[in-house]
Length: 221
Image (cartoon, rainbow, N blue to C red; front, side, top):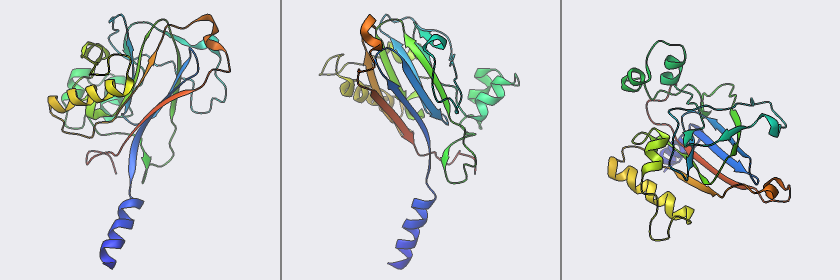
């Protein structure tokens, strides 16, 4: 019994995870992340951009100016992975396809928890140009559907209809399971209507979504 208890305590102390969250207050959308959990904007009109273009404000930003917000039009990824693959692509050593095919593709370079060292989370803010869905997820989903266009093309409605975010999240999880389901799958969604002139009213309630994933054996230690 004593050995089992010690083992359990050690397991708790050694936990670590990746993290992504999203908060919307009226029209603006603010995304924060560490690791390779991702946030996506899925436009209701079905258009998609080829890659991510986060408008980073930096981890020390205490206040975000609405004048600096990037506009969200077509579907796109909002985050940039803290990973070996993203680093190699950014410095021009590998193409995206080469990096994704490499054995180190899912080695992460930043995370929360044990042995994480100093963590500098990323923060970015955007303004939707029209209706759509804000999606945060772990790599258990985006492993199979990495591009925003792939995710936007998935049938995302179950019995509850397209307006039911919980139903949409469950449907996306089902798609990942049917595609292989070889990793933890965490999904949260926030449907956003077309911003109205009153959407910036500071009395509007915050809507939040977040995703955490415990990294697998490919994480650096």
